[in-house]
Length: 131
Image: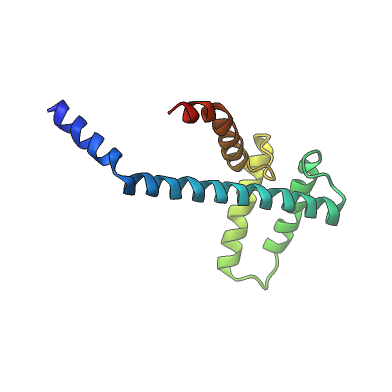
């Protein structure tokens, strides 16, 4: 039974169509990771420029200011219930980040993906050349 499964997997891997799909998938993931990283860096630069706060150093001040602003908006009588519920969720998320010392401006998933791709290419290029 194992040999049948092994043969089917080998047949599936040996098809060029599957390799083409994997290549497209790798390209798309790389483009999205780069785009996310670029967006994060641009957002940090805009925050620093607009507010005069370095996003990586003074994120607690910025988060406290956002909390105060959102609580003031929550008390506004002109907000409908849908807006108020989304504000409450955002307040809870920001408060959780403050309580657990999580910088909400850092996008660690995008940085991890970008760094892993850079490392993967540098580590596996010699192996690809050998094959």
